[in-house]
Image (cartoon, rainbow, N blue to C red; front, side):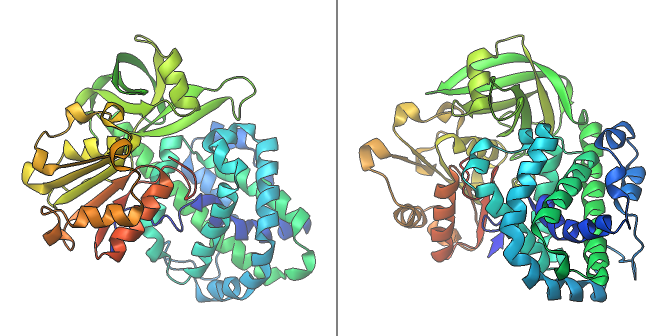
Length: 450
């Protein structure tokens, strides 16, 4: 099976997860006065935009044998990491809990990167631990994580993560480890091994994300830019399409997402909210467009308070869950997940669009249907008010039994978008039925709803 996007079972804040082990050893170094890493302030890093300066601050150690690339870690380092992981693993939950508390206390602006629901229900904490496990398990060959890492690079750029944020994470993880890990578990060679491993990865993240930022700048701008709202159209029950004017034509790939920044209500999680939304417009025009359902802080603000002529900070579309127009596709969605289906359908030639499957409450709740292809032979609309709710297994069986699909389980891309738990279920059942190519886009951690 080829997973074209990210495996939901290992998705999370991978950058933070992979930093965890390194900070464990950096803490001991700081205690012993052997590093001054934490003396470089976030403000200084943000003021000095030179990536090379940031990397120098992040990587004060020399490697025993410097790796040639990010997927080649010296064997003496990997051996120590693998040997000490059983010591660190039982302490991870406590470290993670203290880390987030410290991060949000010292750097409250970082709350803007994390949906409150994923913090309150523990999903983000679990994701952090799982991500660390993925890095350590694959320490001898990090290339197997390249797909996951690439998606996270894009997500970081969409959110506006910059090198200074890595230093904030370093400092707060150091504080957490200092409180939770007994000194007796660590020796000097362990400190250096973990430090070199994770500091290398930090530099890789900075380099990769800088390249993406440069690409965004070439296509339009870096980071966020205030765009004027020129269209606000109701396209379903509590669903609105927002169209923003740009000064130049914006190139992007079908399936990528924009990121918007909205103010947050008083006494809310953070002072602003950053959210990804699938770009539902056509590439190459002097506008960017997204379609949102009124279900959260950002979408509530956009629906209730954003009016024609107002501006909103918007980032250039990024994302790796794009559409290969040379392959046949089955597009599967539920609720507002239809935005992914719309983006794909606008890119696919007629002969490559096998079937559109959409699950919703009823026809009135079905958004954007007027912008989708009209061929009834390629439509399977399932309204739960009429049919009752289909469990993932029943839905998957119904999909693969369709005449347009039966002979394409091996070569077609089955693109799924909807609530996270629903995606997980449909994904697993289609895989069980023999579907080879499954593509999902997860904008949150595994258990967090989209």
